[in-house]
Image (cartoon, rainbow, N blue to C red; front, side, top):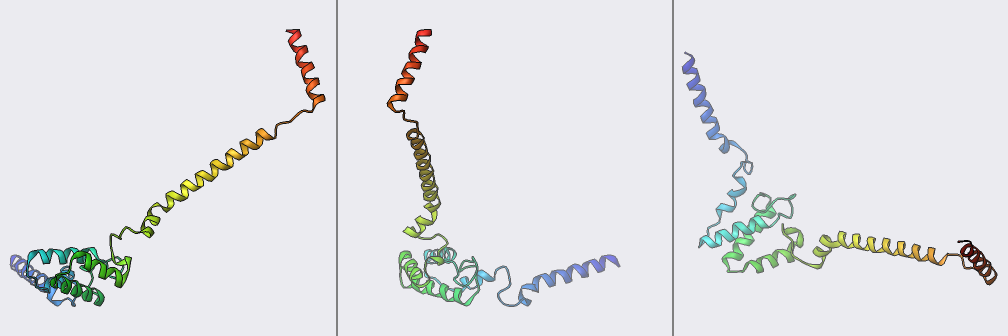
Length: 173
């Protein structure tokens, strides 16, 4: 009797697991992110590879840190369709990237372009550190120069008296 229940339970579990993706709302399965990507038909495998690579490299403007491939948002779907159409029209990767940059700015790239703003972002902290070190060195040097200048300057009478004292010390040796 127990073995029959196990078989029935296992069969029921298999049926539930098999049908679970079909019962889930649209856009919630683990393969849902690629479902929209896979609906496009390409003439060559190279076009499909370019499309997948570019969809992975561009960030969805509406989603928090999600690629176009991983997003089911309306904007992501529109951008995937736009990329598909540009690839099918024979546009180069650079032309597609330029289109995305002009439309959405640098945010859409996971790897931003190398521009002066990007360089400032990466090297700005180093520049501030070097500037701070330069300022500290300048302050220390000025303090040392001021100490040298602050040494007591003796007038002629004091110098004569000092010479006399030094001469007496030399004579006593």
